Picture 1 (cartoon, rainbow, N blue to C red):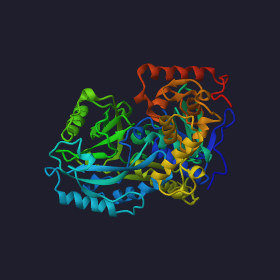
Picture 2: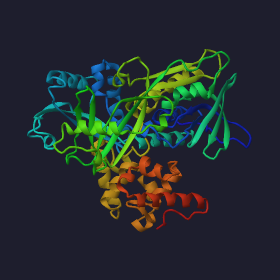
Picture 3: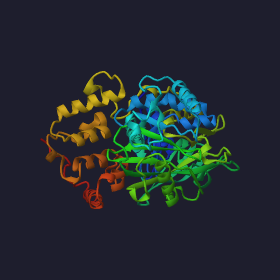
Picture 4: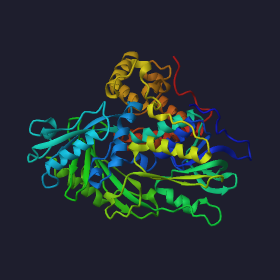
Length: 539
């Protein structure tokens, strides 16, 4: 259902009027804005930084049920996440794809029967059409055994999925905008007052300019800042308590090292502390290793960084399995994300539930409902958004049907290139082959990267170009002016980090000098707008 009215810009001095104000530009906020706008409500979304600046670009980048959550009895969460895997894989085959995981058997950690039982449940808790079932393997014969120490002779292999997490957020925001939502990045909600007729919020951009939004309902999807938003920004009616729950903030850190193995499987390694870490093929030339679980104080989640102890831990645990040890000096990049987990009194941060809770503050017959999102994980973002939109509709007294279960995300509909879809992974390869046929002038690595990033919308980047020269100056290796202009124009990219570390991971492949060239180009382009020359030379 397309939006019939926009949350249009107000006249000078007037408030921007909408049905729902969504605070937070991570995966949950953008997913909720997308769902609400698709049901026809007028939506405004604000994010104080760039889209996916924090937790949503700092995940392990997996679409998974959470095999280890079975040990904690989280069967409902695992089932819900497993049900979403193939829904998501079909919605955006360019940024998500199936991935096989190898778990070397370490009898000192978990007996083989327990692992087999867990994998049996994992295979059968939800229907699978694309992902193959688990099986046992002989690591002495399987290619995944070669990088491992010789004592690991048996193992198990199972299926989950991979996602470019930051691009997933951007695609949700793009669709929200195309269905009528107003998306304001680098714009903080600094005040929200509940009144008799709704919420009146003040938004402030990076330059200090403010605007007022009048909303019938407010959605707090601020992630690690959800609790502090309720305690410091949202102003309730007299005597009303908005913050009734507490978050536990758990830092998850990752390291990236030069490629540790040549095959295309990932590893799940069991650790003596009963935790697990993953080692995942990453960006062709690298291996991603993570994650940690370190509880942090709620003071400033945005300041969280990996520390030396976490780096040492990840290196040590990976080296327990790999023939060639991983050392801190090997780390070429690292990142840390803060998971906003609902406090369930678990003593171990690893055992805190990853499920979400939607908390409604609303009295029947009264105006200005509030919905707060507590917790969540990237795999269940679509279902969370659907549940949130259902709840907003209930509070507004306007129930409208859900629509996202079978919908494609922007760029995910490849049928115009390859005909009827078959299965997501092979569909993408057919798309790449057709793209190469139509644009034989594009170098192989570039065509695959652009296909992964933009899917069927790639021609919005290429325009009418018929040669590399027509894409403009190559500002950094494989990054031309045409793509930079597209990212600025269509994807809210306004700084080098937006491009190099969120809209892409080109920062990993660039030198510091090349990264600086991108920053300089963006600065010059912003200074020249709107008088800047066209980005693409027309044929």
